[in-house]
Image 1: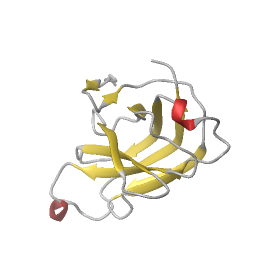
Image 2: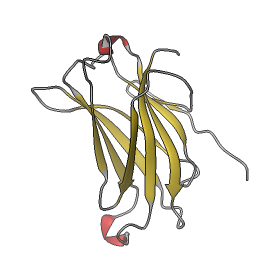
Image 3: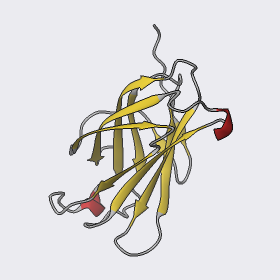
Length: 144
């Protein structure tokens, strides 16, 4: 099977497969019934505002109908409204990988990163749990 890499850039959006970083050992499964995960920025992370990127490692994708899947990443401060950081999509729609989104220097202790799965179809057309995505880790990285 041939693997593909999708790179998309704009002023608010930067996405490419990479490796390395400060790891957070987690495993979450996203699906139609559970489309959102939240990751806390704890004091164990030194100077989170200095990290340039959030890296999301998707290890497993179950998507037999190849439903187009996109992910949106938000920053939620301890007080205040969430802010859009960026997003990424799987290509092909069943291809796992590592994806990064810029932090825009906004991360602070006590804040949260929210990752939302958004199927690119009308929700009424989706059978419940027609796909699932497993996220193994969320890392903060500094390299370009």
